[in-house]
Length: 202
Image (cartoon, rainbow, N blue to C red):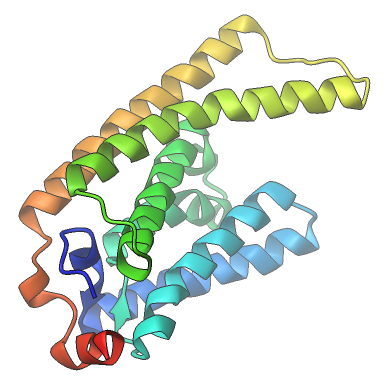
């Protein structure tokens, strides 16, 4: 297993595991709940979060090896907003912050479970750029869907610029948060336990 900074984000510890599993359970509940009420977008997002969150404990065969609960909390913030009925937390800014957190999780798991290796700095730049690009891709998909279904594209230029501003702000904010996290919190020595590393390395 790689001893890179990214892989070091996979945390081992009972407190982190309890908090992380609670967030996974919440995301799973939102996934099921949104399926019932036909909320395809958030249901799909919740399923992605759950799938990514359970990969480390399955791979390391330890329920205590989880992503940091702080990163999962950021990823599930819009889902928490849906559960609490707090629309502010499921608005564009927090939605893009959650998307950035999911992007970081994907980068960490690519580093941990594939031959791909990247530095923490590159991962941050990738996440920031990806978050900013997500707004453009989403608007393009909405426009194509409107054309194919022969429906009017109702987003105005002002709304489009606001959406891009939210994605840029969220990407930069997420990059700053992740940079602080890598500097202050991530250390391979106090992360994956030796027995778990041995199972993967062997």
